[in-house]
Length: 465
Ligand code: ADP
Image 1 (tube, protein in one colour):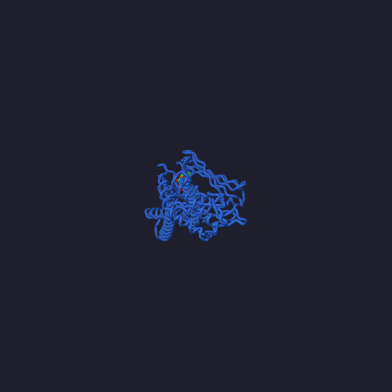
Image 2 (spheres, rainbow, N blue to C red):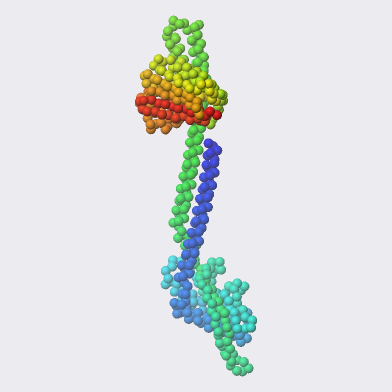
């Protein structure tokens, strides 16, 4: 039992762990989905914001015009390659405040409950018309360069969109004192990024319900499991204490009872009690009877703690006919009541079967005694024993019978049929339980057939090998 409880605890913990892992996996998946949904929803709401605002559009145009001029200056040889970005930065500084202000005005028109920052970055600036293309700027080798928008950290940035601008730009150039029109092919790529303040908190807020339900379910399962196991351990402890108590008390009772038995035997001797002393004789007999009864009760309680797998059998081959005759004769002698008729019907010839005599006799006696206890005024007991494929014994009485609804529980510990008539008969409800355990230990079966007020038949079958 202790081992079983331990296995149960281990399995429960493993089950709980598996449940937590699955729940964690599902929550993580939901978190990812919610995060993606939230980011793409925000992305959609701010992309192409410039296109709807003439002010933003014009700032973009100013920056672009300046950008093309700087590039033309580079092509003319007036500006060094390394200073291109510095010049662009100066323009950004002069335009950016206005850009951010107008961007925020546009943003405030959208319904949002969180702060958002936006940034336009350069990805590549390449001249394509030279024999060998001339790269001015290229991510990821170069440090991040944003030309319009707010500053924020790289790791807090979410990509919104990217755009490619392929253009053929013409400009005037002075060569040998003459103004000549030159042009360049430009490959210009930009990236738009956004930063959502506290986006994790927002996503978690959206998952609040799910998280709460998950935690509650987990706590419920954990609580139930904890409660059940705790209960099981308590029950086991109580059962142990009960068994120990019963064992102790019965052992304690056995010693004085044994002494009583000896004492009554001595009293019965002629030398002590004279035959004339009628009262003394009856008293001694009463003491003896009650003593026997007490001993039997104690034996029953003691045996009750034994399950069929704890019964140690010492089997021996018995001559079935002899054995059954002896038992039935002994039983008749022990009852010595004229109203009881015991019909013996033994068809086992001289065949042998292996049983533990001590236990098997106890089992048969329990059934025979019940036939008398729950019998009529004139009890008839028919016992039929035979050996065919199995060794079978059936004991039938013409007693009060057992209601069909009670027959299923008949072999349960402490079960007694609960009508008034039977309550007059004393008993602990352990006899049939113990009989069944003995039969099971012999790998046999016991069945009952009964009809109320007609009688009861118990059939025991024991395999031959
Ligand atoms: P006990 O006789 O000590 O109560 P048992 O385990 O021997 O316990 O029997 C359980 C119950 O089954 C009895 O209380 C009785 O109600 C019923 N029973 C057993 N044998 C018979 C029988 N032959 N006829 C009618 N009822 C019976």
